[in-house]
Image (cartoon, rainbow, N blue to C red; front, side):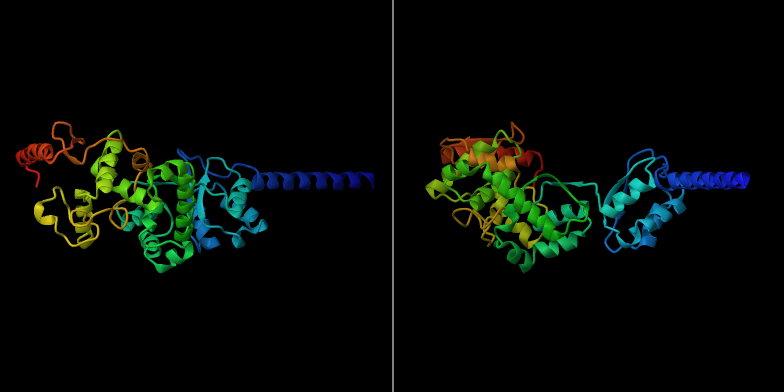
Length: 342
């Protein structure tokens, strides 16, 4: 009797040990293959459990162990779309918990050199799960204006060139909402400067977009901003070539313009600042925060004319008088003609 009991206890211990070993292998043992570099798993909305298993197939050492734990933790009914970081040697427990809880890896989205909503949608669609057409459709819809109580001309001004972190599955609505929140945060720290400028946010953003289109040199931006503020104060047309180019590209988005000629200056558009006094209806590009600050901290001077300076690529020659401006302009035209710029 005693011997039989000992045998039974021995069997129980062996079975318990085996079950513990199996549990350890299934739950906590490493089950992701060795990866030479960080790997990301992208789960699209609507992905089924079977499709998820296919994506994981080459990453798992023992797929059957993963499936056992996934079923037990009800992962098949709790699949959350997103971008997930997968690392070498992850256990099934870590992987299942990450996927079931939706612990995503953020993606970096850089908004830069965006002139139109199409550019903006393209950059967002390249980094995030929704297609660029989904972003563009929302940005051009009446829905976005109703959702955030803004006007069509104000919308581009809420997007600031910068690098942001988003979750991969961010929707067009949530993307705009985040951009408006970032815009508010940006302007809260510039309240005093904005009041001192005497301009509205929209006016500052619109002027900043012109300044940034005129010069890529941050150290020259305050000088250019001061020039345009002088012209606005005196009621002189801004006569900014980039606004003409913007008007031309509204009519033909694929048009490549290297030089603005006199014949281009009569294009009928509210963005043509050679025809219309004051600022155009809205920004001609998505401005960088540096160009906005250049307007808010514009340099105080008496210049009202400027022309590209061939002796300093990227910079301009400034003038107070039309006579000096014509001299500067003639110098630039000679240089452009010699270099075949058309």
